[in-house]
Image (cartoon, rainbow, N blue to C red; front, top):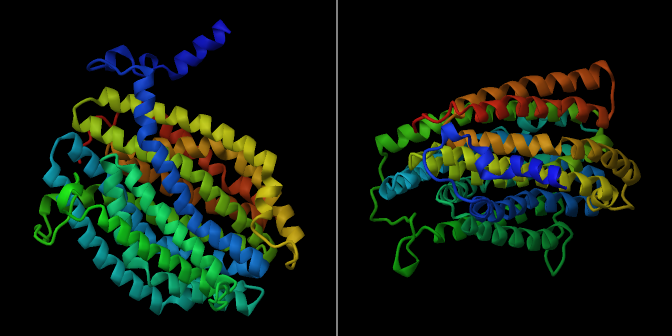
Length: 484
């Protein structure tokens, strides 16, 4: 017990996580340090899980009502939609990192200027991309794999789903910007409640519109898309309410029509610098995911439906690392702003320790309950349901094995983003996701002729490679003097 206790202390105690020569002041005790991380991370994890449930609830309800074809119709537009959203994901990375740094530097007005400029940029980009996506909806669905669909209905439903979801792109982009800024100041509870409300509304209208309940028409795949749009609009209104200036609710971040709504050179420079590197990452990552999904679609409707189930659950497990990554980004950025890189190092390492512990629990739960989990996503009486469940349950074992590397790499990349080391993160992610993952998928499907499990083993091996790049980079401390 004594040896085990000493090992755990060396792995977890603050005094062992930051070397003496790197300290620039007193370190917090373990209770305080771990509490600081969880204060930001826990609401963020809940929020991220709820965000991922937008797609998951659609998938469960469509799968139970419409079977494998419905799952394929909802799954086909996923990567094209993510390509459209990638610029906003990048923008949000910049917003969170810059607002966190400005808060640490006690520059409140500059933090608010960053938010205003980001909102103006997001609105212009989202309107342009929504129009572009509407015009090219059909060729995009064909490019994503629709030309190899076993049923014309799968393709047509996918086009409808994609088109309807694009109508909400501007409100979705603006809501994401506001939530990203709130995360930067550590107000993750606000974004948690915003997304909780949005998801509850989405779930209600999914029930009403997919199957036609409570007097609503049965719209099937179109109903799933409309329910998501309604939820996104509600989320935007809630997010906006958190920053509208006035009365006793005026907070650190606030917006008013009386503010200076014009592009600020310094704010835009910071957003473009940090967000631009993140955009490189997002474009590379989305290209890789797009190609990867296109390859998997060639496995056929049954295996692709199973893949869609596993991808939805992969998205849920990813959110645990993402929530801790938000905490790492905020705490690393804020403490660099306060000129305490030693505390930035401490909080980044604590976040990664939490990630490993959570991933081990997730892995055990996935292995133990994989059949029950995947059975939620498809009605037992629908065509080929048994095959879909069998393929998905086997693939979940791969998902369980990859958990420690997935959550750790997400947290470490969040820590590096908080420090402004976005270019390194972008290069690694682009290499791994847009080059390594598609190549491994091509080898698995077209050379070795493996089925879904083998393709996942080959394709997700790049997550281990990402961890191997990110861990030594953060441990080296080369990011300490990055400017944003």
